[in-house]
Image 1 (cartoon, rainbow, N blue to C red):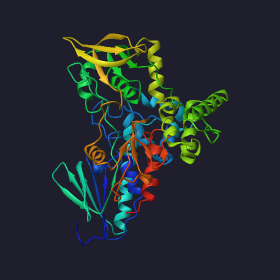
Image 2 (tube, rainbow, N blue to C red; image 1 turned 180 degrees about the horizontal axis):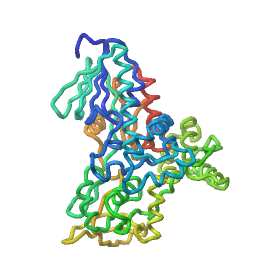
Image 3 (cartoon, rainbow, N blue to C red; image 1 turned 180 degrees about the vertical axis):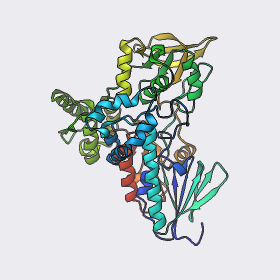
Image 4 (spheres, one colour; image 1 turned 60 degrees about the horizontal axis):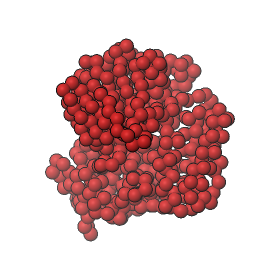
Length: 474
């Protein structure tokens, strides 16, 4: 460590968690901050909000899952302030996002739009630049390194971080903010007629879409909706053939904003000794909200706001029982991109899209396509002939984290919850190495608190990162 500096802190990551950590840092004049991540110079984007390849039809195709003001009220204001530039970039694009937005725009509700994710990344980069400027004005020395951290070690005098480009960085403390686990692999998901994930494979998938292939998606989640948007950006809807396969064969409900904005206000009782008792209480409140005419956007956002103010420990007395709650709650409160889900239903009536029920266990590649092997709910084996398969199944058995997180797991600095399947860290996102903090979208237990709703929700993730960094004492 450079003796000129009072203290050196490393911020590892390039997504919204890292940005939230950055915004909560308290560094003194003369301290040094090292920001490192694969795209650290675009801090805040990460993979989820990355800039698309310029000139591709799908550059702005992928949309935020939630309305802009549910993601971040400050982003909603940014979207309104930059609306003319957004209109210019989206003009003439396929599918017609501006046309789909016309109703909300006519109502004066730009805040309700499911904006293209790249624009949220633009907003995040501006936030990052402002945060770094404040640190520099305070006299903090800042270095930004576009390199992936691959290993971490500790000694009495330092935390040492190794990078993929051969650097060895000695620091006093570190905030580690990686992405979530990888998509679970399925045998045969990377071959002539299958892609193991969407992102980074668009060009190859696009070749099959343009050739008229029926696209078979494993999963009925946000990534599946992105694949549908990819298809829509490349071909006319008349040529579309698209299948979403999941164990239940169901789509998430669309998150539709309404004016005036309303939030469900749950009235939950305390003192539940079991997860089942608490979940019964939650279900009663969801049903009561539906009877009042509240829709999934109001219900989901209302429960999210409630759990931010009233953690799960307020209601479930046992930590072990609390761990059983999120798996069910996640399905009850799930929702997705209004534009794409409504498109899916519209296209289903035209026989251009459809759902299929089953759990995919293997993909076999043939001379002219793939044979998808599935298990139905009764455990019976089925087969489906597909032109091209995209694995959108999300995390699961066999998923892995980034190299640094995997090493921290191996060292026992952080743990995995056997019930939720997610990561466990200490209070304030502390690890067993007191100079290092860790938070990921895949984190499900922080100290004695179980996350009632997944931290893949950007608003919740930034909230917990801000709280953790504000309480950090290194």
